[in-house]
Amino acid sequence: MSARLQAPRGTFDVLPADAARREEVEAAARRILGGAGYARIETPTFEATELFARGVGEATDIVQKEMYTFDDGGGRSLTLRPEGTAPVCRAYLEHGMQKLPQPVRLWYLSSFFRRERAQAGRYRQFWQVGAEGIGSDDPALDAEAILLLADLLDALGVRGLRLRLGSLGRAETRAAYREELTSYLRAHEEELSEEVRARIALNPLRAFDAEHPGTRRVMEAAPRLLDALGEEDRAHFAEVRALLDDAGQPYEVDPTLVRGLDYYTRTLFEFTSDALGAQSGVAGGGRYDGLIAELGGPPTPGCGWAAGIERILLAAGERPAAVPPVDLFVAVAEPECGRPAFRVVSEARRAGLSAQRELAGRSLKGQLKHADRLGARYVAILGEEGAQVKDMESGEQVEASPEDVVARVLRGRRADR
Ligand code: HAM
Image (cartoon, rainbow, N blue to C red; front, side, top):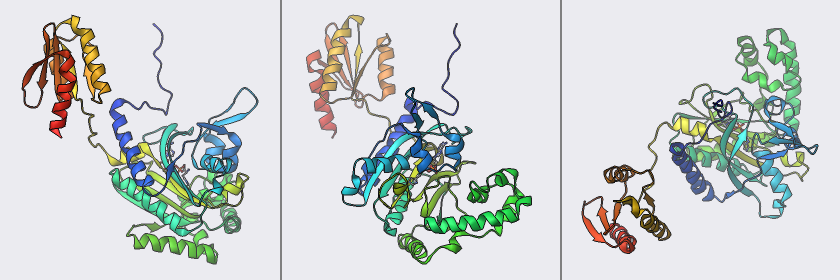
């Protein structure tokens, strides 16, 4: 016997029992984001590697060690998308969306790929729902994005939410701060973890993320970017906060908030949930005013977020999913009635009913039990002498010819409403 194959590590199957909850996520996103003027977009599963190297940033963990990159056989380097913002900005430019009324608001629900250490809530193929607003630097776009995300997480029953908010300022402020932080880290090199020390030049900001006790002590007294913001960036951040305050959205300003992507400027945010373990980040995002120029477009501001669907479902806990109704189950009293049963089911489906029939060779008793398990509203029993239609709610049973079954069920369904 051949060895049984399994799904690759860090991936999972979405089984029918899980699909209903995921459809709820999609329906809520469509309702909440669609209602705010966001339109659906889907980009390809793979892109030119350079898009992420330039967009997400060469120095990030994602680009350095987590991308699934391959040669397509024609000498081109392609990468399975690790995130959605760079691809959406690429599509915005490629399709001339800067000519549309701005900002252009887009949302997506797609799968993404990162070669991370797999554990609960962290996978190598995972799903995100995301939203991007491109073409406006108005702080109201930032606040709107955050509030829509909060509404979505709330509608899906995510528990124990906490919102952390920060601001990185513009690219020049960030560059000057980076130098200041680098010299500070160099001055305390002895006390830092080896990993942080090795990455001082590459990504000094990541030191704020470290668990290592010595590094944490050093970082407590480290210069803070929030204190180095220029006048305009400070005012922008104050306005985002004022709009969130007006809307009654709780948040904590966290001057040490860092995210694993390099495109952020100004506003930065993350929702975490106490209901999750180590992987507590449910959603995150921010403003990326330099990204489109980095991808070769005209300077164009933007702001958005993405939420992990598996983490939303984990943090929302078990919630009963709605079972799709079955209007009609067609049972057969004799095996010879297979063909008429097939005809009745096809006719019922064409008439817009949800219909199923026996295909497993069960006894009549077994079929009726199965129809009951499915929650069928009506059962038609086809025999050599015609058909019986049983109303499963009242228990009432009437004779009918097989040709009349669908009309009877339709009449019954109308009376139900
Ligand atoms: P991100 O923080 O890398 O941001 O990912 C957003 C969310 O995706 C995380 O909060 C988490 O819920 C989920 N996620 C990330 N990696 C994994 C994983 N390996 N397994 C399961 N879930 C995961 C972004 O991707 C940005 N593109 C967000 C954004 C949009 N910023 C601006 N616009």
